[in-house]
Structures are given as structure tokens and as C-alpha cells.
Amino acid sequence: MRFRALKGLAGPVAALLLSVTATLPTAAQEFTRPVRMVVPFAPGGTSDILARLIAPKLSEAIGVAVVVENKPGAAGNVGADAVAKAQPDGHTLLLMDVGSLATAPSLFPNLSYNVEKDLAPVSMVMFGPYVLAVNASVPATTVPEFIAYAKANPGKLAVANSGVGALNHITAVIIAKQLGISWKNVPYKGGAAASRAVVSGESTVIINGSTATLPFVSSKQLVGLAVTGDERIAAAPGLPTFKEAGLPAADAGTWQGLLTTGGTPPAVVARLNTEVRKILADPDIAKKIADQGGVVRAGSPDDFKGWLATNIKTWGAAIAEAGIKGE
Image (cartoon, rainbow, N blue to C red):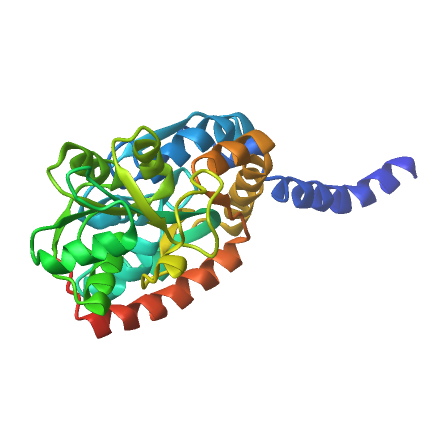
């Protein structure tokens, strides 16, 4: 009788064991080899700084190495394409200014990947206002002086940007159009390279993320004029906001986000989101971001997905109105 009872339980027990096993996606199962965190810009920019801040913490959390890889080119599209075409298992990540992703579909009709289908949002990371700054050779220490000089010297100023189609490029085009300014837009392989070009005098104006630009302002290598966003930032309280200074594009800035390859299992995306949000909730990490003018903006994958869809439409309309073309 006892044998028969046990035999009768064999089927249900086996089914239960199979069910439990199937619902145990442990860290070891989810992440079995080193993870690449692609930054589609040159080292030293906002995305790169954030990646090197987050990668070691994420490595501790998921139990495998997280290696930052810089893959610059085409306003972030070279690196984004590499992640879009990777194995959809969460082992290839993309950390970048996602404003460039929002503008890419409108700027590049022959884009080699689909932003909304081939990339899976994990979490927004931070918002950093843009800093408008100039080389010391520009005779301006205030926005009114800057605008007056720009209008009196058409074509003389060269505005460095992160690449054709980058959000800071589009912001510069919108500012020039609305204020009646004529200046040159010069693309570089990321915000760090653009900032360094203005420091050296190769270009003369920069509109770029605070994380990468404020250190040059603080060290007096660049002259800061204004910041985007709703309020002045603690890291540079003397700089007025664009609204205060009467500049357009006051809501522009660098939105940094983390994505992975489209088609990655939802459970893996959810695990990455959980760990990244824990990292960004660390007071030390938040302070390091705030010290450079940024604000943590962690959220759910769905929130990020909605932000991307909205901004693709919004910036698409702005790009069409301004007549901006990608290259």
C-alpha cells in the first residue's frame, strides 16, 4: 500500500519539481559571461562617466564582469546598431544620451536599426542640463553680450557638438534660427571631444551636458553662460537658466538611459532594471551625479519606453520644422 501511495505521488511531485525549476531564473542562469556596456561616444563624456560609475556596481550585483566599451560614431548610431544586432540575452547593454535615439529616426531615413523594436529600454538613468559655455577668446561673460557678439559677427562662431543629429546639435540649430544668429556647427565624436575642442580654441562655443562640461567651467578653462532646465543647478549656482536669460530650447538637456537588445526576455530586463535602480538609489552615487549637475531619473522599462515614443514624435516635429538633415 505504501509503495502504491508513493507511486501515485510520483507524477504530481515530478510536475511540481519541473514547475519550480522552470521558475528559477537565478543570477547565474541570467548572466553566464561578461556583460558589455557599450557607450557610443568617445571616453570622457557624460555617458562614459556614468557607465564607469555604474559598471562596477552592476558587476557586483549580477556576479559577472561588466566591461565598458566605447564605440563612437554617427551621433551614437554606430554603438546603438551594435547593441541592436547583439544576442538578445541581456549581455550587451547600451548607455547613452537617449535624446540621440529620439532624433535618429527623423534624421536618418536609412537607419540600420529600428529604435523602438531593436532596442529594449531598461531604465532611465539621469537628466543633466546643458551648459552653454564659450572659449575665453569670445568677448562675452553674459548671455546678452554673447548674443550681441554672435549677431555682430555672423559665421565667426563655431559651435561644437557630439555629432550630426545629436540633441545638442539640434539645440544649437534651434537657438540660431530663433535668435537670428549665423554660426557654424562642428561635429565631434562625443561631448568630451567637443568640450576639449572649445577649450583648445579649435571651436568657440559648446552646448553640452553638465557632467562633461562643468569641470571645464569650474577650472576656468571655459566661460559658463547659462544652463537649461527649470532651475539653477547647485554645482554652478551663478549660471542663469536659459529661461532667465531669454534663450530658446530651455527644456533641452541630456537624458541618459540604459537599454539592451530588443527581444531580450522580460525577466532579464526586469532583473537589470532592479539592480540599476538600486545602484542609482545609493546616496553616494546620487551625490556624485548631483555634484556634476545631474539628477537621478531611474524608472521602469515601460516608463522609459513611453518617454522614447513621445520624444521620437516631439523631436521629429522640431527637426522637420527646422529643416535639419542627418548625414
